[in-house]
Length: 350
Image (cartoon, rainbow, N blue to C red; front, side, top):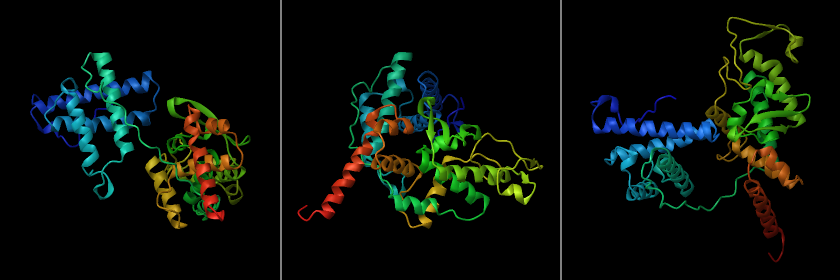
């Protein structure tokens, strides 16, 4: 596992035996062991592991800045002070110096509690978080787009440029399947069963599932695989007839790159989540949609529109890859909220 980088503590500029340097290495080692445990033994995804790592690194930096150089030395009161500071101090990582939302604080605290529990069990450290109760936050309803808004978004990339052909396939597949951003970026061409209209993806906990997708998504994917993706890889299509469909023969060039990713950038690099989010927001802005639209908005819209049109909640749960039906039930609250608003707007005595 790669070494952690305490960006705010330049330990490499300090004498190797200094307290800060030793503290950095101590936190670094304990966090690495915990992340390896949740990814290998508990089956958490690498994305979840990376999120835990980020939260625990920031926690470790705070402790070192406050003179605590080992997880063994952390006390209950230290965690309370750290939590309080999260809740009241503007964050330099958030736009406009906003404080962390209650849900963000709860997530960070959950990571800290799990880490201390692991260290107590595996390394016999004291557990200062044992008295910390989990925060209960009011869950917000996911924001979704209307069918009209979705159609506007899907029709936004209309050009013949190879990136627009790719982006049409991305948007169609996101809305047609409800894939998470990380799941879409992790797809390979072999994961598509175009003839059957199915995509295989690996979700949280490395659990695989098959999801059907629409005819519109199938057409967009066929166009992308037949023309845009080969050109993004540096493959030259041999003639105009083959450009209109999947090429039977390709002419490799010196620029050709090999990649297993389904969706790629110009030159063949796999599409990353940050760029996926940027392209969704760019097209949303182009058609006048709210600035909160993201790849996950299409996932929420997918589930909500299925429910509104009579789909079974269990089927939606399976397609979304939720381990617990209670997670999927949030979409019934959206539907109830929608009905209540319609009633208020329409009933003369509402």
